[in-house]
Amino acid sequence: MKVSKLLVGLFACAISLGAYAQQPIVIKFSHVVAPDTPKGKGAQKFKELAEERTKGKVKVEVYPNSQLYKDKEEVEALQLGAVQMLAPSLAKFGPLGVKEFEVFDLPYILPNRDVLRRVTDGPVGKGLLDKLEGKGIKGLAYWDNGFKIMSANKPIHVPADMKGLKMRIQSSQVLDKQMRELGAIPQVMAFSEVYQALQTGVVDGTENPPSNMYTQKMHEVQKDATVTRHGYLGYAVIVNKKFWDDLPADIRTTLEGAMKDATTYANDIAEKENADALAAIKASGKTNVYTPTDAELKQWRDALLPVHAEVASRVGKDLIDAFYKEAAAAGAPIK
Ligand code: LMR
Image 1 (cartoon, protein in one colour):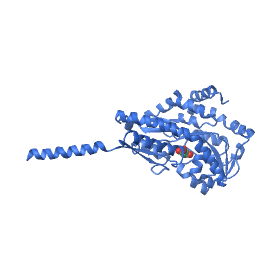
Image 2 (image 1 turned 120 degrees about the vertical axis):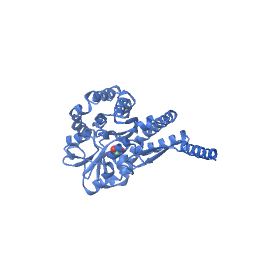
Image 3 (image 1 turned 60 degrees about the vertical axis):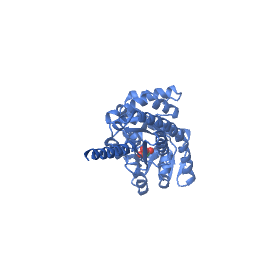
Image 4 (image 1 turned 135 degrees about the vertical axis):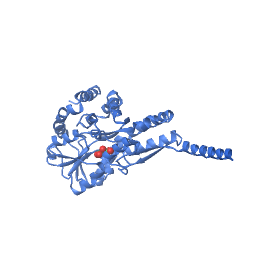
């Protein structure tokens, strides 16, 4: 009797262990933009590759459009382990205490994607991601969105047109400085709140790559936009470090491969996604899209380049110089 009870117990235990072994490892990947954006599509690609290559041992649940968490909350949720993966914009690491990422927000610091790749794929990019480890976060990759356009409800052809405008920004001190340099009044706000704030007049304008503007329908509540391409918006894909370190080694290696390929995919589509979105904004007829002349572009550059020196003590002069060096090496010097 005793032996058979023991056998039944062992059998039940074996079944439950078997069931446990078959439970997939779940990665919750939360983000704030629409699925139909470079980041949204990159997340979806990672999901497909990760699930296929681990043969179902890993399940990636993607939550777009701030469904789970808004900007600031999502980083806290990652640190607490409520979600495992995010891709916040590089402008959102300041509040976490890694303000060096704000170097990417400097106006006209990245003349083109070639310089960008030199920075992100080299020691500078790696050094920045390594800084996250002390926060319980591991940085896996850089994903592109694109270059920002400036929008409002009045024509903004030259920097002087920005004077007095209330402009929504991300939580970056560099962006705050940038707007003040133009005589505008910056206001930090979560991405999920921008459409309504524009619609109700809480803010007058904003800056974002066309892809974000179009997929959040911001163009429906902004009469004017100027293709200033004054700043870059991109992401760091990050994971909870403990979660990542505790994964079985073979699974982690497979996921690293999936991330590498999802990164190539996301960065390959980003430019076209933004070009298509800009064309769609123009075609909508809701926003007048203005392309500045060379002389006007020079005015924007001249007005904004002083920001580099003004924030050097915050983001690091050596870091800014490292960006300049890569730009010069790529034949596109900043100054
Ligand atoms: C923003 O808040 O404007 C962007 O960072 C949103 C995003 O993730 O692209």
